Image (cartoon, rainbow, N blue to C red):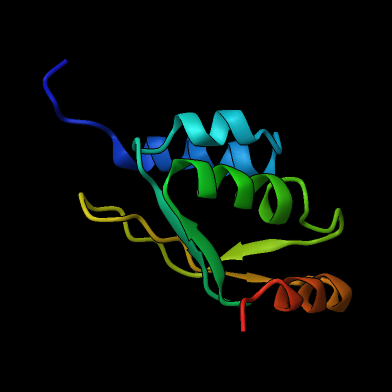
Amino acid sequence: MSGVHDLGAGFDQHVAAEFVAADVDAAMETMVEEPYVWHVPPLTGAAGGGAVRRFYSTELVGHTPPDAVLRPIARTVAPDPAALPVAGAEQAERLVELARAVPR
């Protein structure tokens, strides 16, 4: 391999693992060894492999309401961290639940 990667395809694979397959292991396989994630709307997230896996397992992957519709707003794919801002029609109970998880 030349060292050049299709970052867009890799990010698509990651998002599909998170929101389509709801597969934490598959999502983790798309990340660097020591990933971090900041889930901005509820101000939650994690840093480091174990913490990100825990966050994905308990707060994110498989916890999106089944009727939620995520609409991409913009997409940035560069060698720096990827970002995919989305607008979601999420249920209020889930947002309140996520807000309670924020350390105070």
